[in-house]
Length: 213
Image (cartoon, rainbow, N blue to C red):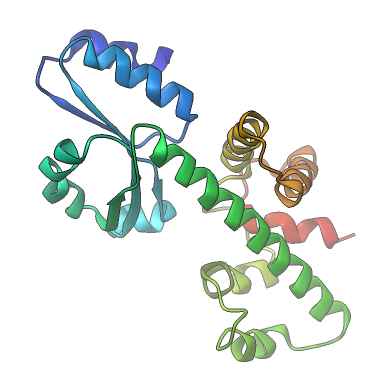
């Protein structure tokens, strides 16, 4: 919670804090409690959509907190998001973001494996993706990342260092609540492999590099 101390010390009562940090539900609860002691409302509100979503005002926001407080700030959220929703009490937004990152990790790994398979099978992967992206295999990752992956371009996007931080939070929460995340734990280690070869700041789609000699 150390990063929030300046805000907590300087804020005036009756304000509302919307926190877009991705962190643990426990930290969100701690910050909310500290602000409540100063009569300040709090919403934990992690986002999805990456740099492009932020630049284009197309973020998706997952929120936790009080319904009345949420309704007070909907017009503010509308200014930079394409969709937002209150999902429960404080901490619910963070737990939803964990689900988001769990899903992304599995999808990116599947896409990396498919592209590696296609290349080794001698297929025109661009043509194959054009076909399968029109069916059940379609995903945001496929649509937005397959071309750069095939060109070995990763110097952009959501960094692996950040993804490992987020997956670590999700794995810790799973340890606390008894959920089983075997695929997430495995992909987290695959990301560690990419970090170890100097790719910590590469986009999460760099999982494909693990299949390259």
